[in-house]
Amino acid sequence: MAIVNYAFARGIDYPSIVATSEKVAWTVDEIFAERRFDATKPIVPDSWVGTQHLAFLSEDEQRTLNHSRAFSYVHLFGNYEEFIPIHLMGLAGQDWHNERAQLRALLRFGEEEMKHQQLFLRAEAVLEVSCGHTFGRHFDKDRLIAFTAAMLSYPPLPRSLILLALEWGSQRHYVDSVRDKRADSGSCDPLYVDILKYHWIEENQHTKTRVLEIAQLAHALGADQISEAFDQVQGIAALVDKTFVGQVDQEVSTFRTVTCRTLDEAEAKALRELLYQSMRKIWAEVAMTHPNFKRVALELSKEGAAKLGIV
Ligand SMILES: [Fe+2]
Ligand SMILES: [Fe+2]
Image (cartoon, rainbow, N blue to C red):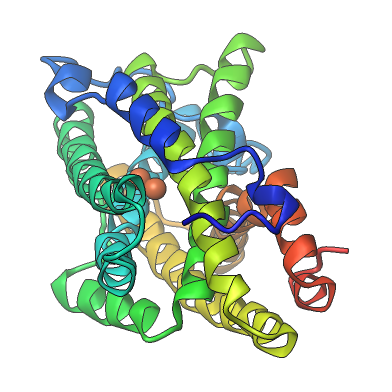
């Protein structure tokens, strides 16, 4: 049964979430068909890359960085999602006696995340075909196993909180990319917009089940334990931050291989720093500053939320 003693969980129920998810479901093949990305143009908004003001880069070099960031986003997202089905199966195992619609949501959305991993893997492959070269990947099998195991070593509440932030962040990724496209401030590739759009269409249901899940998990904990969950969110955020650094290294290495450009020490440092800042911005800042996430965090624990800079 859903716990409705938190305002953020009121008015949300599992049966209608599942019913909506059945109406909006899509397949990876429907999105891609035979489509390709247009590699003669930027693929993601310039704001996702943040290197436009580096005068020592040519237009072609900026475009290569843009394509690398398009790749990094799908690569990281696909790998970040690896732990989610296991997380949801754990909750289903605890609450197998709960209402049927809740169990359906847990199982269904675990499967949807598997589908999203497929979506992002397909996007990786189509980006490489469209751009005519490979891109560096932070995650290999060993890193993925280590990262997923580290995520799963945390208790369910901090895992659900980081997930909620990430899922609301995916809404902003879509809205921002469309907004940038409309503002004509650097185009966003139509196929890429569709990937963001269809991912968000399903994540929109996930955020609803996530708040119910968080309400239920928090209901069983004392104030100190809830506050501690925010320390654990910081621990998970530190794990994720290491992957930003690793993927930025891959972007710089891809840049060197594709452009054959030699950067001096100061240029390489400036490039790496800006790529890291924009990586943090599109993932961590966008997620942790989402107004809905702030509302949930504050209602759960003002003390805990303050640890994330939410006041
Ligand atoms: Fe997803
Ligand atoms: Fe999700």
